[in-house]
Amino acid sequence: MTERAAAGTDAWYAAAGPENDVALSTRVRLARNLANFPFPAHAVPDDSERVRALVFDSFAHGETPDAFQAVAADDLDELGARILGERGVLDGGTGMPGCGIVMRTDGKVACTVNAGDHVRISAFVPGLDGEAAYDLCRRIDEGLQKTLQFAASYDFGFLTSSVLDCGSGMKVSVRVHLPAISFAGKLHDCVASLEEKGLGVSACFGAGQENGTSLGTYYQIATRQPAVGSEFDQMAAIVSAVRYVAECERRERAAVMHARPTEMQDAVYRAYAKMKFSSLMTLRESVDSIGKLKWGIDAGIAGGIADSELCALLYRIQDGHLQFVLKNGSFHFPSDIAHDNALQVERLRAVMMQEAFERLTL
Image (cartoon, rainbow, N blue to C red):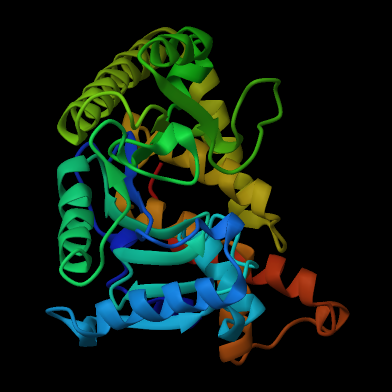
């Protein structure tokens, strides 16, 4: 298997981070628009291409130009776009004129151009570390402002394509794993509490089998009001809320282990058996299995693999990432799936899962 080498062992999502047993990763996004240019939705192609050229040139003349790679969206192939979407870099909207992407070579920082706003700077860090993610964004923001003038007003702050994003233009989101809270039937109360604090909760990988649940019990908690308070206030609010949720998850984890150990062990062992003996695995099956096995590892009934490795696996089993591995590797498949790309992806995913958990102990 060559996937590990193809993906790179230094990917940001493969590193450990604070509160990693519950919080997988933190993303900060800053939305900005250039003064004296129409917003992307109302711009003519010439204006959009001019904006893209100015932003690309600003990165080229920054302090570390060699650390960034700029590409026009038109030059990005379908597979590349899919991988960037799976990594949270692209949220759609790159089909508009003048769209582009600037990526830092380590993948921690990305900037989309003319995708919703003229500039959207995103930073990704493992675990719950909003300060580190914001600092990465802030440095890029300050560097761009040396050569670009962003649209802003005294009353509304930074002006953005969506009125709801005006102000700081900042959105913070944290991916979390909440199996014990979900198992204990307390997810609804947890979500309601977060929404009362002005935070949104959504599924990371699609809906789960039961109504109102998320596949693998992976959720995303995000800020919703960039216009309320400073960046510091907004960051403090979500970090504090996620830390509280993490404490609740750990409490419920211990309570379930004490009161319902047989049910919990059954869920973990079934996931292990399915993963261990499957020849083919769909993405949904894999995410669900990883979620249950991570629950067992964090509860102490399994071991041998770190939380950071599980986080990285959630990216590496995505369809686009596996298509990249197939395209760039040499594999021998059984004759009945040798000409079926979809089944080859499922086979590769199954083997990758088995390799990842080969050190798992129960």
